[in-house]
Length: 395
Image (cartoon, rainbow, N blue to C red; front, side, top):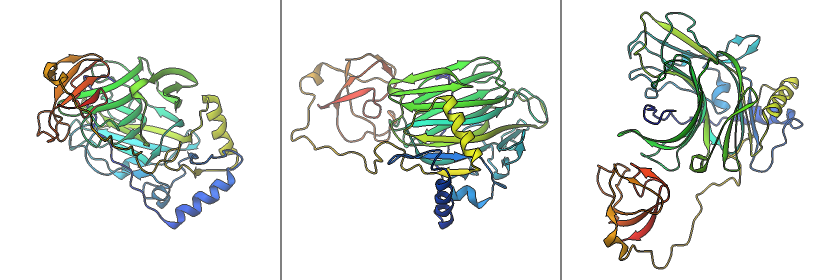
């Protein structure tokens, strides 16, 4: 995604309602799928065929999903997120999740939709069959909207190093400076909303993707790999590799109303199924075969995913504090003060007292000045709040 134009606020974290029925449904279904997916310790699988009756179906919350209804970004300021914009019709012969978005060109006349799961998914394989649309189901065409399948860790503070996001985003009518259809695969390290700083990497295809597509991404061995209809289209690694468990999300929203041509336009996006296998890397063909196996067994839903795979961490690792904390020493006298607009490369050192809340123009933390060394090329990333910098100690 364009790092100069994309302005996304994080979605809401999933609300989880623990009810006895959820345990019963999951346990029963898991027994029926033992042959299809053998979860390892701390690992598991989520499969959902979206066999729900309505957005108020109690199985939605019992199974860890949330139908978003709260206001806020992303998208058009003032837009609503009504539960009625999420439905579960039969599409092309299969029960599906359907997202609806509509606009009359005003914030108050714009509605968007989002369907999201718990924040517990990490390494492994993610797969969904998604139907993108280039044209509205009613009204004039041309609106700048985003059709998505993604995972996300919420941003706790500007440039939060634990933030992460893995995106499939299709823009049928362009937006963010694009004039035609474009399909983005974007992997995020972090961002800051004001002033806008984006730390991400992206790959894109400038062509129409209207219709059904098998979307797969894998998170393993330091690489996030994206596949569309079985073909590898992106491989992102390095600092963009996620560090924390994420939620699974689908949403449909408008970037702006600048291209709206009048009247009310209504758009749909459909999802046939979603699957995640924790700690297991599947090829696109293997993912498709796994889904076919669940359906052949009559399985509509199963969820045995724990805390996100791996070693099931429940607390952040602890380390022994050094007896004598490092100090910047005499090098503080020769290093320059950090400046927001300056460019730094690996090995450059600066002196800076980090801010209290990740806003360099805001109040100071009270930690005093420290000496910082740049780990790689960076500009606009504040020492003490981003992984671009190593703390060499107090001055």
